[in-house]
Amino acid sequence: MKNNHPLTRYQWLAVAILALTQFTVVLDFMVMSPLGDLLMKDFKVKPDQFGIVVSSYALAAGISGFLTAGFADRFDRKRLLVFFYSGFIIGTLFCGMADSYGQLVWARILTGLFGGVMSSISMAIVADIFSLEQRGRVMGFMQMGFGLSQIVGIPLSLYIAAEYHWQTPFYLIVGLSIGMLLAILLALKPINAHLALKREHSAFSHLLATIKNRNYRIGFMATAFMSLGGYFMMPWGSAFAVNNVGLSQKDLPLLFMIVGISTFMIMPFIGWIADKVNKFQLFMIASLVMIGSVLVYVHLGETTLFVLIVVNIFMMGGIMARMVPSQALTTSVPEAKDRGAFMSINSSLQQMAGGVAAMIGGKIVWQYSPSAPLMNFDLLGYVVIAVIIINIYLTYRVYNYVNSKK
Image (cartoon, rainbow, N blue to C red; front, top):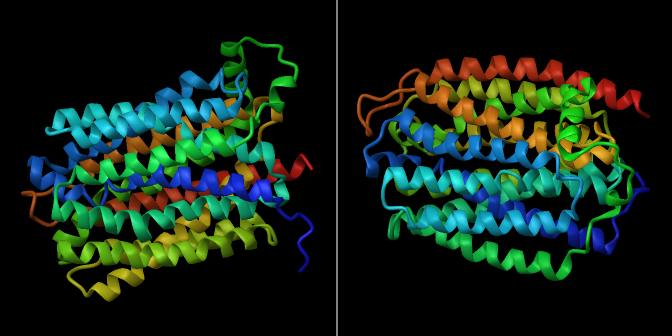
């Protein structure tokens, strides 16, 4: 089928910059899960305490998003990207410098205040410079940053952490991020066309008006429930693999690398498919794949690395294949004049929902000791499945609203 909406050379450059920038932000967040088992044993903390480390980033990101939402459409988006990315780099540096549980929590809060807003700014930029017919492909490439973090970032981080210390990967992320900051400054054009749009509200009124829009709230809820499912289970991935499934710490990098390669290969195809077929139907199929995978995953006992890899590939494939059509639909919900505020609020709710989920997950899952198997992990899986079912209904409402605007 002929592509009637090709990307220009500059659009490809913008996609590369945004995807690689997201890679560093995603890696900073994602690396906490595989490092979780090391952290819990090093600091001698329980699952609920580690849940606080994860949720502190998410809740800080949510608060930051709300505070910036009213102003998000009043500045050049490139300038916003540079400001918040610089703060993210500083926060990540402090994570590497942390030598106690309390210092790490505060460093994660600082990183979340800046890094948590990056996704909403990137999504607003995507909506500004790409048409709806192009966004499925763009979202697919953006999500490749997630796969790339697993192929290269997480295995390398785990190897470095094992060879040196768990703090060392954060210094690696800082170095990569400085390089991407220079790329943003030198190559990305100003993104300020939205500044010419007429505004009848103050920044605070703009925020309230965006929240009060009933149609926007449908998109907010759909995104929040998307986040809940992942945050419920993600923090405990390495601890479950090591303490329940019987995987060794040395095998963790291989697990994440193979799953990451599979995700990396799937994402462009999912993005291409999302531009060709019904986005909700694709979302529905991916959700069913995820439900089946979660059911198998949470009931795994001691098994082989091969089985764990296969189950994780299906589960992560389902997660990412849901995100691409969901985000493509969600970016089409707001009007251009509200896009920055909508994306900021949307990202905030996503992060805050995830933070709450990580805290609740830490209360559901427990251990007798840092080396003991995780208990109640199957119950956590049933909660995730219930959240997925609710999310299907909410995404269907988003799909109907987007179609009604055409």
